[in-house]
Structure formats: C-alpha cells, structure tokens
Image 1 (cartoon, rainbow, N blue to C red):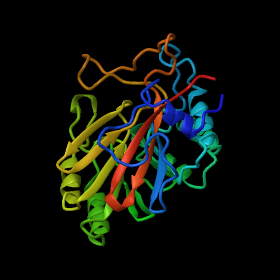
Image 2 (image 1 turned 90 degrees about the horizontal axis):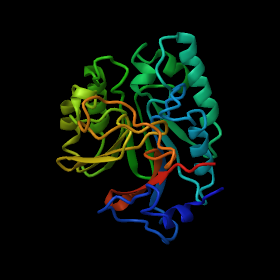
Image 3 (image 1 turned 180 degrees about the horizontal axis):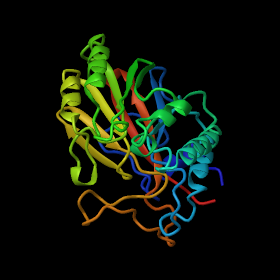
Image 4 (image 1 turned 180 degrees about the vertical axis):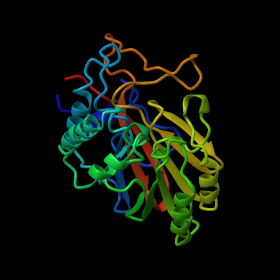
Length: 296
C-alpha cells in the first residue's frame, strides 16, 4: 500500500511516528514549505549483508520497503542522506564490495535528484574507507542547500573512532569562511559526545570538534550508529540520532551487553524507521518527523 506524506502526517503519534517537541515549522495539514524552507529525508544503518532471522527476518526487504515509502511521498524531498553503516561488516574484501554494490542498486531506485552518502564503521573501519570510496566518493565533504551549510564528517574510518587532526584542521578552515550566525548542519555517523563510550557510542576527539563549532550560533547535528531516536544538547548545539533500517538497539546502558533487540512478530518492524527533516532556514530551526517502516 502506498502512503503519501499527508497520510504520514495524519498518523503522527501512531506506529512509532513522532514529532519532536519544540521544533516549529510544518505540522499536520500545513501547506507546502515557503520558498526559503525545504525538507530532506535521513535514512541510516541499513546494514546490507546482515543475516539474522531472529533479529530481522526481512533483512533483504526492509530497505526496499523504505525506498518504496520515500518514493510514494506526495512531495519529493530536496535530497536524501544516508548517515552510515550502509553495509554490514565483513572480513571478505570481495564480499564487502559486493554488499556495497547491492546497497547501491537498491538506493539507486530512490526517485530523487540528489542522494548524499557517508560511511559507518561497518563500511570503513577495516580498510580505512578504501572500498567505500570506490563506490561513494569522499569520506568527508561539504555542500550547501538553500542557505544551509552541510558538513559531512568522518569519525569511522580510523579504527580509533576519531575525527583526527587533519580532518579537524579541514573543518576549522571550512568554518572560517562562514558568518557566526550561518545555519550549519553537521552529518556524521557516531555521536559527537560521550553518549555511552562502553558501547562505542562516542567519538574520541569529539570535544575538539564541538569546540570548533561552538562559536557558531546555529549548529545542528544529525547522526546514526545507535539505532534509535535520541536527542541531546551540548550547549546550544542540538544532536539528533536516527533509527536504523535493520535492527533496533537498546537504550544506552539499559542492559549489560549491547545486542540487537529481537524481532517482535506481533509488532513487525518495531523500532525501525527513517525521518523527514524540515528546515526553516530564516530561523535555523528543524522539524523532525519520525516515520515507521510498514509491512508489505
């Protein structure tokens, strides 16, 4: 069944679809965004190649369902961003490239003009991103869209879970050309704060990144990695984690060991999803709507 964007809005609060509180902008029944506004879709942690029937018996079909749902939205997003772990890790170099090609084939069915990719540690940590770059290009880069400056940071290709000195200097050089009130969105995979380092939910040199961003008044971070919705503030900088499209993970520190939450046959696709992000450029505000994966 095709569900358009207005229908998703009507389902707000049901089936895992939530509107983040305190974020002004488009709401259910609103008209199309004003010219200075836009919206994009964030998908994350697709883990193509993962095989675990007790965790997700539809491992080969979930991303396809998400692609179909995005394509059915009645208003096409300005662009789509994948925030890492496109594939599931493997030591087999040939298989690693095969999984990336498989992901590329599925993502290539998205009916949008622009898709931005970034690596997760599953894609890049074993070979410092060599295979990933063959398929998807640079590990860190910037782009601008309708007055918003987007910065894609790589905190996964170094096995030490760091951004690194060279990339930090690149970031600082990029920021120097911006006004202090410029709207900035940082896209990354791991969180840029110590959410739960015991589970690798941190970036070792995140403090240096945040210190570089702190002088800028309108910074928002969107990331993946933790397979659940999560919101956090470092000073005036808001951080928003996205759900996974393969399996959910428990809340940080809620259980002794981090492990995927088993599939619930009574509530299929529970905890899985993607999100729309509406940008109000003038006020540098972002409205987040969480969308649940639906069965066939």
